[in-house]
Every structure is written in C-alpha cells, then in structure tokens.
Length: 474
Ligand code: TRP
Ligand code: ZN
Image (tube, rainbow, N blue to C red; front, side, top):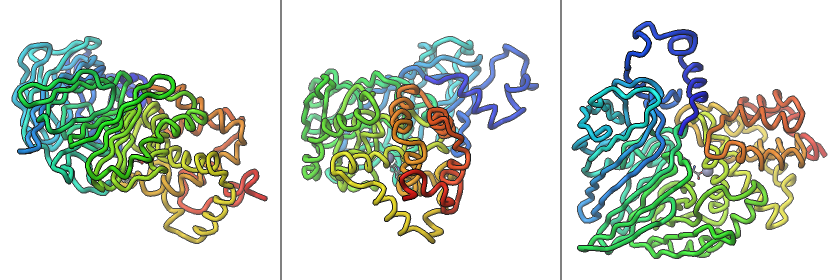
C-alpha cells in the first residue's frame, strides 16, 4: 500500500518541475499508457522500488533444497496501477525468470541492471485497476554482498541452511518485489523444504504438511509490511510456541548454535509488556523471534518476529521489539529518515534500564557527553539525511543522547504523548523524520527549530542550551 500523496510529494521534491507537479509531461499526451518509473524516488537508492503502481499484497511461494542451494519460486504480486501502464518494473536480483503472467496473460519481460525486472503486459494496465503479476523463477540466489552496510541478502547458515536478511535491501534476493518501505503490503509465504529442515518466516504460521519427504508451510502477515522486514530462514530449528497475555501467537525458533539465546527468547512477553507501557498497544499480529546460530553482523527487526544474530543479548531483544512500533508500524518514507527507527529503538534500551533497573539516565547522559566532548568523530555524524551508506553511523550512539535531550527539552508529559501517539497515528503507513520533529514541536507547544538543527542536522557538539535542557542543566 502506498499513499499517493506521499509519492507525489516525494516525486515532486525530487524531480521538481520535470514531472507531474507543475504540469504535464511534454513527452506524452494525457491518457497514453507510459512505463512505470524504475525507482520509487528515494534519493539514496534511485533504483529501489518502482513507480506506477502500489502493491496491495504478496503471495510468495518458494521451494528450497539446502543440499544443492537451489531455490524455485512462484510469486504473485497484486497491485493497483497509479497511472496507465504500458510496462512496469519489479525488483529482483539474480535468479532466472522462467515466465511472467499479468492477469493470466503471458507477459514479455527483460532484466535491466542488477535489480530490475521489466514487465510488459499483453495489454496496458489502466490507472486505478488492480492487476496480478505472477513470476516463476529459480536458481541459486546471489550471495549477500558485503557492502558498507554489512552482508545484505541471501546467506547460508553454519549448519547448511540459508536465510534472507538485510536492510535496506534483501527481499529482491528471493522474490520479485517493489523494494521500498513506502510501498508496504500484506505478505503471504508458502515454504517447501526437505522434511529434515524447518523454514520459519514472519506472520502467522497457518498450515504445515509433509509429503514425499518435503514439508510445506504457509505464513501470513496480515499487516502491511516493508519488504526489508520480511525474511525466510531455513535451518534445523527447535521451535517453541506460546501466546502473549492477549492471545497474540508467539513462535520462537532456535537454530543449532543459538541454544544460549533461550533465556532472552523467553523474555519476549515481558519486554513487549514493558514497551507497550511506553509506546501503546503492541501493533503486530505475532511475536517471537528467529535465533540464528551464526554471527551475521546485526540483528534485524523482521516484522513481529525479529531475527537475531548469535551474539544478541537482552538489550538487543528490547531494541528489536521497540522497532515493532518504530520502523515497522510506522515506517520511514525514505532512507534519510532512519533515525525515526534507530534513534527511538536505541532509546528504548535506556527506557528499559530506567524502568527495570532504576538507572539514573541524566547521570548516564552526563557521563556520555563528558566522554565524547572534543570527539570530532562522535559529533560529526548526522542523524538526519546522513547520506547513503552512512545510515547507521550515528543513530545508535549520538541518537540516544539526542532523544534523551529532546525528552528533557519538552518535558515528561509531552515526551510520553509523542512516544504513544506518533506510531499509532501512522500505524501501517509511513512518516518522515521532519514529520516527527513537527509533531514533537506541536505536542510540546515549543519552537524546536534550533534544537533539531543542532542535534539532528548539525555536525558539531550542540551548544549548551541544547545540550543541557531542563534537568540536564543542573
Ligand atoms: N536495523 C538493525 C537493528 O538496529 C540493524 C542493521 C541492519 C544494521 N543493517 C545494518 C546496523 C547495517 C549496522 C549496519 O536492529
Ligand atoms: Zn535497530
């Protein structure tokens, strides 16, 4: 799902007078079908996502054999055209496409660059209509690429299994997708693996059956999900099931080599209770976790059921579950907004320390500021619009201090309201960091322009008036 107004704003911001904002595209007459854009309009990743349609549902089906590493896929993407489409793109990396059908008719297709699948339907798709694109494909998924942002994509596990994980990009390594958080949609997955293996994904586990040595399982995530928050993990799992107090199903899957994470896994209900007290009702349909036996460099807040690296700890669990509000219920509009996810999820670790251990957060804050005073490196990291490849550099450290300073700047009552109301008001949708700033200023009834400039856009230690607001000045 994608809000047209959001896209219009993004496109107009990016392309200015070129397209659709101030007038008609001179290249085409009105009503004439045209190709959908190859990217959704994110400055950082111009080819990420696509234009011309809004995905409304994914029905992904994969068969995977760890013995030979081969994946066979059959995926149907349901979407609504937002313009008259002569052709459109999906994102898909590697894998060989065998056929594409649009509404049951054979479509032409071509691959462009390393992420574009260009589909030409037999008839143009009229604006406003819902259409279904079925892609049959297969091969050995491309190995996750070690970029500036770690290994993102498809990887093997130490026990010979496999998984898809990565932010901003991982979904296109295993299914055709409009790969950008602006286009969230419900997600269904059918997995088929040899019976000695178990596949685990996000969403509710529905049916599972074994025949001829293969186990087939279906997974259904009813809430709109950003594609980087989907995953599939195939391993020799030990699976535990339970329920939260309100009946939300919990599924925790421990890979060989992740047995030491059981204590953390068993505290998911307690953590969700705590966070619900801070951020409002738990916004996801399921809970639990997927615990990997490998060190993969990061854990990821896959929707409802985060995926954890071997070295995760209880703080990681708090962080990934906080993302279920910050990042998952409300998702970024563009990757420049990543602080909306990470600064808030990281601050939840402080809230936990305060609420559960009675830590004095002002004292923590002063210790951190004293330690980093004079560190050019620490303060130079921007928290908003930090540039592609730099998304995660400041948000976990400077980001926590910035949120604590904001809390002291606007006071407890306004801060609580912001934490509860912002994710709820944007649930299942998107928001930008500047929208968060505007909301905080409105709730607080303060002009926070200077404060936000100094902390989130600045590259130097904020001036004392912003560094020591409220009780921090004592
Ligand atoms: N969003 C993830 C988390 O905070 C972390 C993450 C994903 C990450 N990719 C990354 C961190 C790359 C650093 C670099 O839980
Ligand atoms: Zn995070």
